[in-house]
Picture 1 (cartoon, rainbow over the protein chains, first blue to last red):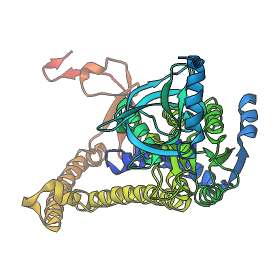
Picture 2: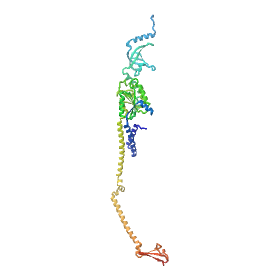
Picture 3: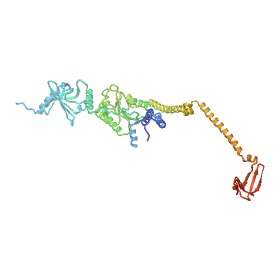
Picture 4: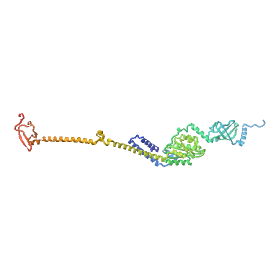
Length: 67
Length: 406
């Protein structure tokens, strides 16, 4: 399942908070860094690829019923 | 009593015709306070008495007129009625047939607004505790407003500019007139049955109080209160307050403000993620630098830099002195060893058999074994004699030990 922008951003925020707490070892820092970069990229992709979409309620209802 | 008697009905109808014939009584404005108010729910007609300090008159307002009332008539309310005077022929009752009713003092809309507001407030529909937060990063936003107004353009512009991540779901409805409330109710039901919508914006652009009236509708307010999705209301201008505004999770002063409140600014979020990335990078760099500093502190420590001093300690602070000492000790040891070696070599030399032989001694061996005692030989043995310059053999012809002959 594709994770939402909100989830990526809040994961990133959690990582930053963890790093800034200053409690993590070098190993943990490195893995947090890697994870953080992953979420940063997800956010950036979402932000850069965003293209406004406008739909009518009826169109949306059709899509929704297909899902 | 010669004259012909009238029926009661004839009499009533006659008096009615007199009253109805008076043009001044066909369109009267009268003011007073409502009492004995009865709302015949099944017929829809309203019956009440209008009274002032000194007098009262029975009043009726038929359903067709009552349905147009925005506020609720009730006992104690001071009103101005417009209508006509007539007689109900069945009971000869003289009464006022009200066609319009206005609260006196305040406008009817203001009164209606206050009445609905008070009612819903009492029921708890405006409680701050029931307000939900608006999603920070929405991906689907339903916009319930007129398809043609300025409001819809403003909302689309703001959302597409600020947060193009969001999909806008247009839900066109009439926002004024007879159809407004039923259309909005129906559209909201459709929205509520869908999944994935993060936020609902409902509203319209500015207009007169009458134009905005649909947004004061009680049924609409209740429908919004039931919403499973957070609702932002945006009706008219900043100074316009409607019942919807009180029920919604968030009230926006205008439609464009609603859009601004519904979505974050993508540039800010981009800057935020960039900042986070920088923090990640500098943090790791910092962590590395910090460890590097600690590591070089170790490398520069006395114990690793000057291990001899560190281990030997202060009494032998000067390594040279120690080395000198070691050297002098070893030199002494060496000299001593060398002397000892010379002495040993001298003694070894002195003990060499060849040296002994050269002084006139001989080495006697019997079958390759050195003979050191007479016990090693017996008569007739042939023994080998070795001198410094050659060998010869001898036969043993006599053996004598130091105590005498064997």
